[in-house]
Image (cartoon, rainbow, N blue to C red; front, side, top):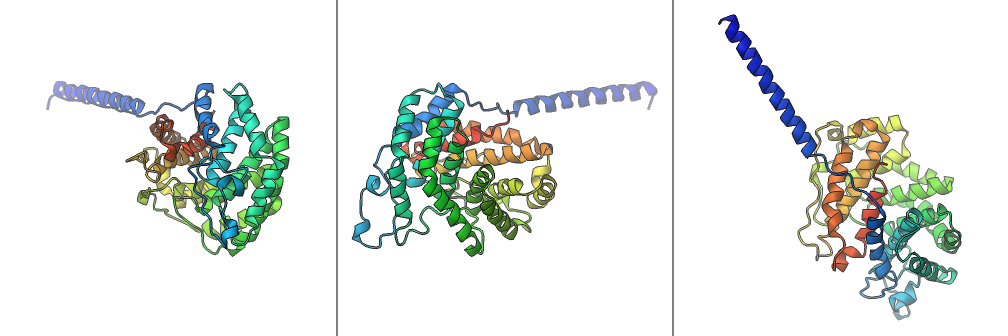
Length: 368
């Protein structure tokens, strides 16, 4: 072969590789998802959801175990603070959403109405009645641990709100807050195995919010109890089957919620080693994870997958925040939020009574 032909082949090869590289760069740009933004417009949209239902008594899912007919009563009678938004835990985290949004956006629409309703619901008398319900025979496991976790998250949000109303509400909520914190400490040693489902009873999710509360309020006893539980349940876990997720009704990722909890409890370097063994596929820069697809948003169970997308996002953001070498996970988180965020404000009460909280919690974790 002549030198001229060799030179020609070399030039063609260079041009081909250059075009291929340019195409790859274009594809990368195309696959970069817009970063979701929590601005005043979005805040008003999200605030409208719990504001609309926080004092709406019906429809309602009480989730009761009746000991006798004396426990039969209307939702507002049983739960004078948290009777709205379809079920108790959704009411609790709806209140958290409004506090979080007021803190971030003091000029929020209907802010005075929101403040008025928060004060009406989280009164001293109402919380005393809520506490009495927990202490009734047969109610030891009521809302364990999902609703428990949201009470602690609400308490944490009130504690960090530099506002007289926040201090008043924190004080009113304190008897129930303290009861829940103590209940965690008493319950965790009895729990011999973690609950690894994608719904309310997921142990890792409940402990994650409880850890945030314990860290912020410096509740050392609760922190110690959670840390011991994390080591007992998760320390030796490897190769979590992320490919098996999601299940049809998941709104939490068992694998990612566990990782998100462990990152909070472990030192950075220890978490890095643990995560590489637990979810080794996440280390690859080309790792992909498609958002959960919702088949019918009017179905109260199927719409859980929108919640999964938001909860996956806050876990992925958290991992990337702790370990910058996992920065590629942020784009996957963005994709998940962008899939579900436009679809949560409609006439579908099955989703709107709770999804605003999950959307907000994920947006609160978008890197600044």
